[in-house]
Length: 238
Image 1 (cartoon, rainbow, N blue to C red):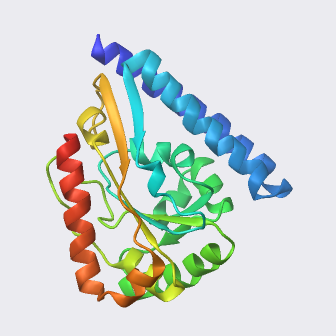
Image 2: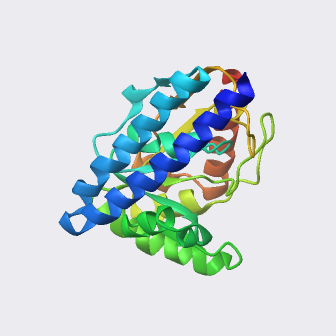
């Protein structure tokens, strides 16, 4: 039964993604906000399908930690679920992601038009410069920036290689950092076809203000973020 439900979800998800990618592209000439509406609807529709077809519900914790201005969200990366959920989790934002995603027809084009920061992972120095420049511009426009420091999805119980891009951006731009943990990989595994019923919890950890970010050594901040995010992820079962 799980196979049938998961297959039905996958088909519906692909159709939804195609439809809403087209809507985002078509509405982009009318401004970012006009397209952002469809990104949120896509996210909500996907999780509605997950609940109906796969028995997956979501819980969001830690919204009280949100600042009243744009910041850098440093998030655990385990699944496709957290990327899909992001439009309903945080205010309008831009992603830092691998540039190859832009080449996916319609979906990738929509990402590019929405201002996602596509980096070449084979060129670390160029990637950091691009993240600092584009990310600072976005933060200056009160657009949040979401980055997955591991760069790629980690299996449940595993810790990827945390990269300093998010911390460097926050320090250079004078922005704060909002860490996020979750257990999405336990229900929607990395490269997993089967979606298991249960609850995905997205937990935002205490906000690190810009003043604290700028006054803390980069290495210390990286160690702290990895420790806190991984501990919360394990606590949630991720």
